[in-house]
Image (tube, rainbow, N blue to C red):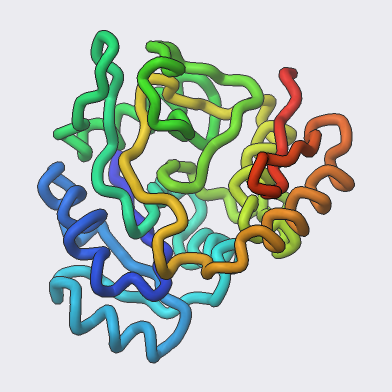
Length: 244
């Protein structure tokens, strides 16, 4: 099955080539399949100076929730889209009690699509925490958090599957919930995770504490049977999904 890779990016023109793009290309992903989605013409000019000419740069929308909507509407219905953040150094697989690099990225994306079709699901994701101790060699197909760092989906352009801008910063949680409600579950690889540096400069910006609080409160109010709120020691507002 053919696929495309969409990379939403903001203010990371100086690092995207050495991280996500380098990993994808070394992993057998053709540059013709890869597009970077930026917020405006100024960003487009910055990225054009830093990334290979073979990689498309597309002007989308500002804000990750809006950008994800734009990406889904940019591609046709039934397109198989892999979304990957702009600071992913590599995907890693659990082997024994250690994590090793997923070398053949192209093969993994194709295998993930085959499993989506087999399990009658429309979105796949990976384990959200890079810690081999907590990971296990299983696939789950019920309600699980599909982290926005790397995921793949079969495009349906359904408005009811689009996260609200009110969930900005936790739009991947809302996306997980919406797909669960639509399809009865999502597909998650519990033996695959990502190597990345969270909260690096660029991306969503720096006021994450207030953004998290707003998004968590919105999700709890909207999905009270699925979402509960808790607070980390640093004051950051977080959520948990119910075990359904």
